[in-house]
Image (cartoon, rainbow, N blue to C red; front, side, top):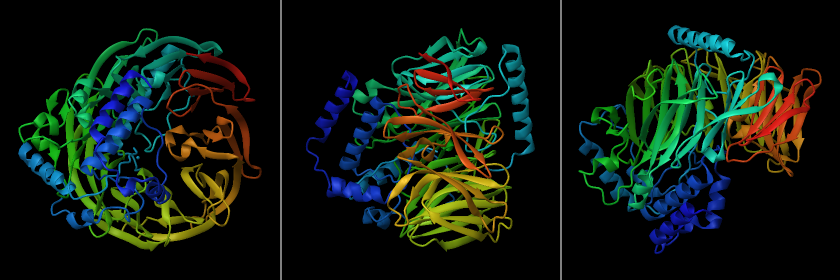
Length: 638
């Protein structure tokens, strides 16, 4: 434990010395809650930030009763006071503030209500498919041509893997990237990005981009000769004043790497709050952060403590959307950056709310927030984005909660949503105004959604309790969605990925018929050529392998149907190993590679290929394998 971490612990002890731990936070109660909680991403933050955030939020949860349950499965542990005070929105959810005092009024109400609560629970995940519109496709094609021209000039290959993203055509940041020649990897727990040349079949470090000590890089982009670093800058001065929840700022720092040996800084933008996520589309970066308001001792005049800032200036009142209920204590801050001007914010918006998550389609940002009345329901807000311009356009609600961003999907102007409510599950279709056009309710009683994948007019989702029902949904008529197939097998799939036109890959766990005894990580291949009669045609159980990163972090998957490879890291009794599988309709799955993962850092391992070489990367170690026989051909320690 370093000095900074020890200072956090000391401060927390000072603040929490007289706080009684509620029974709901005793070990037995926590264990019961975790049993009812869905799987979520385990990727996030470095050790230092993790201690600070977790401890501070836990204390705030005890002392102030901060209640945020973005990914909590059941509602039985939520304070009854929450149900009594929250009512469904009386407005569209798109109302903007007329003054900062409007925001303060909501905050005052929140603080007053929290005095009656016994328990605060905090979890987070961040986490997005619709058809391209013609203009977006044209912009993407132009961008790809520019990238290809630059690749040819630099001697880079045009055959290389890219980050596995939620939405085709919308890029996402990651901890490892390649431009077809150079590998870029996050190292030193987010302190630097190393650039490694792969030319000539040898790994050679050529440069490193390192930020100041208060910066932590979470992930980054490599795009058109630019390296865009995203993450958080922690302000110790604000933390020392006791404003722990206000001490983080999200940043995007851009470097010119047209000469990777000599990176040059081009610009930097900042916004309030902890880094949540980001997207890249149409030449613009979209940056998301979560800004929490510590309401203690704040007056209406202290705007700098309860209004988020962008590049040092407060977000205007009419760019802040008011809560859908009267309780709120945090913002989702959304900013856009034209990458031709990487030191300027093009547009900014903020949603004042009680916590939520996002899904980004090719044209819209959907921000969804779990709320409570008598039952759990979800408010969804749609913010269009085009050329960096942000505009909130619609709001609606669906019953139940959304498991993750694969359960919400845009297609032909409609939004399809799969939810879990109590002991059943539902499917909804919403129009551009986010009004319901069709629904199916009461599905899979006593089970909950574990994974989903939607493509075109058909969607698939998995629920689980003792068996793994894989449902097929026909969305061809938005007013009348239909369940057209159901397959039940032991186990469950945490991640689904289309494998060609008529196959669906599932990665999850194999279990006994009792639903509790697990046999190891399972790969399933489903034949979906007839969506009314889906079949599990092959399966492969990885014995003594108890977890795989791809089940919690879809970016950890390297899946290429053309090359017929399925790659991901997983955990067995010996630690972390990287696996590569191929698939044959007759022979099933074949394990081509199982190699121990070396390297250090909080991020999960990545597999990246350039031509016929696979690079397994984790932190400071890169290992190269020939994809002809998967024998190691080189490695480097950074």
